[in-house]
Length: 302
Image (tube, rainbow, N blue to C red; front, side, top):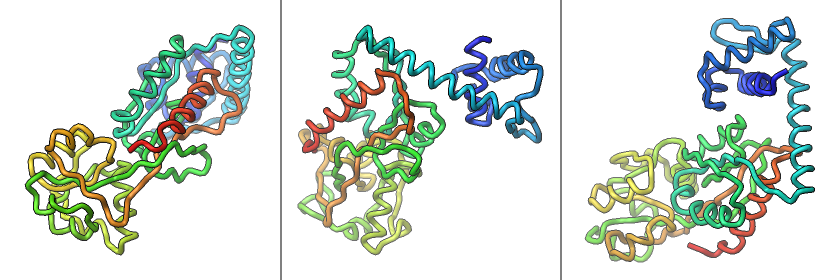
């Protein structure tokens, strides 16, 4: 039996979607369907029921899915055991990160990791925090790094460090002379917001609620999908915003933005999130250990 058929079947069964499985495996949907049909022909039985554009596992499919999970666990054990004997650390890891982390934290971490483990190839996917958590839930990525609390109790969440958020205004703005501002001071000004699903937007809305305010109290002039776009809009005097302090070092040095501390302060965790798997690639364990050490050494960075 071809390993590829079982891998494709397992992915379809986990996601209960041929389309999502094709995206996850970087295959065409007809190719995924072909592999599943080949496996069904091998067993001479249907593994999926297909009705009204939805699929579900048959009894035989449930049994194959259970054994497939055990087989892949054994593969992981075998791989780790042999690599422990040879001392080799290699493989492919897929990491997902929310936009702020991907742009301002991971380049340094992954650059240092690659120097120490040159035979490990790391692929990075970038999305907002909701998207990254969804990828972890669907096993599309090995490790996620996000900037908002994770509510799924079935995932492992490890806080890396705390990130401080600050208000930003252009140099000639009416608030530019202040050192600190309350969120209520921002309500009279056009606000540049991140998109729905962004970790930054989520923690801002929670902060608003804690201050007795509502998201509806904001005068949102536009919604943008990255810190760079937010900074550009504020520099162009299109409004004010709140961003991670780590994203504005260059602009503060150049004098194109002014940062204002929030009163009370607004902080959020940068966190690692992954599945509760008994056995992982050794490269994944090495990356987690490396990342934990990196976070410890940079915990006081702003």
